Length: 168
Image 1: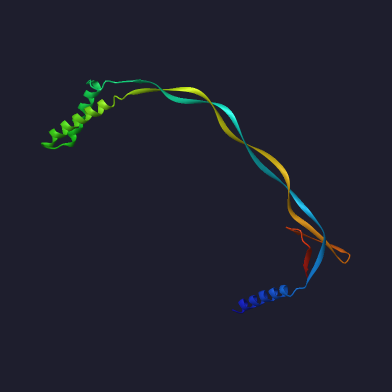
Image 2: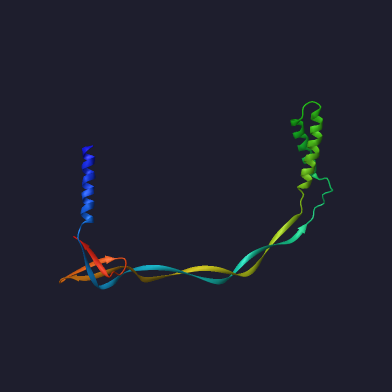
């Protein structure tokens, strides 16, 4: 507990000495900017002709859905086999019939209109973005200088100052 109180007293006395420290103001006679070279990226857009492949429907082949083909027979048999696995007792017959009809329908629907997709080449203008890099000087601080008697005093600050303040 005594150590904590001693530390608090130490911090308080340091704080009071800074508050009551004497401050001298020196009039600034010259302020010179301090530069740093920075790289700036500038973007610009340009357009260029580009070849692209455009899809289009170049023909349709129709399929006659009214015929019974090998695919319909295979679908019917597969539906009956699956229906036989699902049904039990008298429901097995209903499941076989439903499976056969469902399999035939699905197989017949798989004969879709086959359309071919063709591609044609078109020339279009496409927008591109590119960048130019430029190095420019940027002011990052100021060196403010003044005289205290015959002694020159300088201080670096973010802005130009009219006075430099010194604590002692």
